[in-house]
Image (cartoon, rainbow, N blue to C red; front, side, top):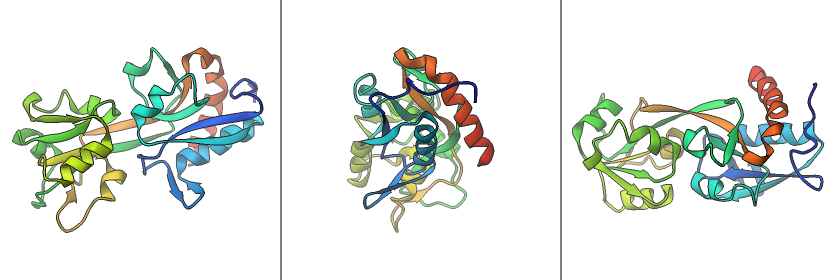
Length: 215
């Protein structure tokens, strides 16, 4: 490998920002982490010769808010709106954005949810919200401050649909709620670096490329 990750972390440690709301990429069972994002974090830390230090966040927006202070790399959706603060690697995975609905009507599709004009709960700052805005009728969107707030309001009876990442929404399926089988967007996921450390992108992309080829 022609590049080294010496400057990826600091003081021998790689602080890794983890969005614990994205079950498609990161999960925790007791004290143990699992998921593709954590596996890639381990690969990056090993290649850079650094000790991995997980830093947990409840949602993507809180990860973004902590850029430049609390983490050295993080795992986020690629979002041009964040490019003033964050440099993104090549994508290592994509996840599906879809809806959790109360109406379990057969053959329901995302296009039906969008066309209905019924209220849709979403979360400000989430990458899927940016994809949803141009698709949904403006008067139908109900914007919560976070995915957790959106879920709480939906479970309390507000809105006809809840936007989110498929794996996260699937955990909420029960007798009253169902996940729509198709998606309204595919969200590309990448390793994020603070903009001031974008010189390390070459090293990160080498690791990402090898990791993706092995998947």
